[in-house]
Length: 177
Image (cartoon, rainbow, N blue to C red; front, side, top):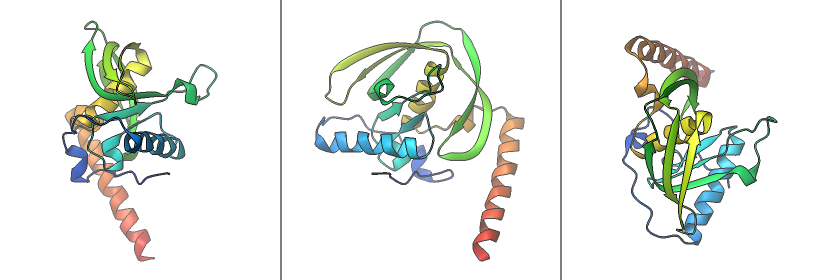
């Protein structure tokens, strides 16, 4: 089932998500729904809080070298702990399903280690680098109540605020028609 994605400035996006303790059918339904929601929205990642469930869960499914997004490459990451593997940073253009139609460059660690649990509670470890590492860090920020726009410089944040206000005015004007 495709769920509704909550969008900025919804205050629930800034909640601290809680650890998952039950690895049951309800969790599996949530993960399956998150996947359908992410695909329906043309995303490469989605955190549970974005569908208004404040649990430490996110999924990532990046597009491969053949420009395909295969379900077998889907990562379901529960209760993650992320450690940078060095100080090397990269800059990547990011967007967010909860901040529609806005993209900006953000600096993140290039290589990370993620310790997490899968849908059955099994402990896992993954070394990720480049775009996969960026996507994981982006989604993990959601679990701590942060959005990528908070990482922008003052001038880029001002640009975002201006664009956001303009979009809201347009949306309100269109609703009146």
